[in-house]
Length: 511
Image (tube, rainbow, N blue to C red; front, side):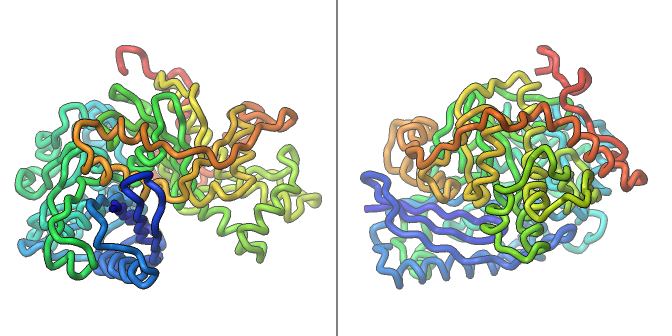
């Protein structure tokens, strides 16, 4: 007998099948999704479903025993707005998390109510990535679309809907909309009314919010035939990608996870709500009943992919080149290639300083890796200034974790062992944990995640002679400030909030 986890990311659809007894991987399949190019980043829901169907065909062709699957759960990219009509059909392509066209509308809402309004109501200062920015853009530019909307779902909610026919989300995904109160575990209808008036009947348009241990519904018979599964098996409520990754990794409070993918994310799990009035830390709910304070950067592995193309090498060769570079000699880069989310600079561009006649290819390679890491290290600072203890383990995951340079830089800058868990697909693994838990009554999802925590595959030790984060930080902030000043006409681009300043530090009362 087995369970199945589905991960719908920005780049691909991945399906993982694990044994119910022992939790070993039995089969995996992945199909790519059409690439996007911000600031307009959209995908068609039909491509998502076709990719899932193709994955199931690949599994069947490889001899996977799909009729033995007893439960399914879905994780997915956060924030995207899926507008459905009365028949449950998508009205238009989905604006994804990295679609920044709603930046002007989000800035107007922030100016209208003030950042603290959002943080107090939802736990986060919303950016152009949040679903509310997509809705505000539609309201201004596509009133005909708004008139046809009867349901608003998030990407993983849509896949769950296709599997079950139920309109259900979970608190982790709902936290990324910009209109959900994770403390009260309900939508903030007053906030929606403040922002949009009677634009939509939000009480009927938004999906119900399921608990972590709930089943969203059961697999429909027609879908079971299409996918080669058994009709009537339970389907979990699912969760957001980083949130499900935390479940898959089985982390506990104090552990810090660095997720290196299309975006860069630094997060931990916490037992109480986090309210960061500086706006850096998103105080979102996790997928297991607690909270997942996180800092998300927009530019991660895409930066090193870009540099590899520029130098005419593979990403692996770029990693090897970077190992020959000197951190104290290499140029410094603010890697805002597609704007930035933390800090919120959707129209910013990257900046480089320190290039000389002695700069070699190896230094440029190291610069690209370090530019990503430096941006994410500010996330560590932001979490610490919210009073969150980061004294646990350092866990790296995502495609970028395969690069030795990323692992070494994070080990050097934190002074911790950089651990790589035995979980190549942490997000899909988390969905499998939730599916497994549906079949084992009496334990919470958090308990299940801890019980099924993966083993450590490798550990990278910090190098004593390597420069520390504090040594590099001042140089990086100077370059980042220049990048912000590059487009001073855009609100917020003339400065980067310093998370180490007194103004960015929350008092105990504010927490």
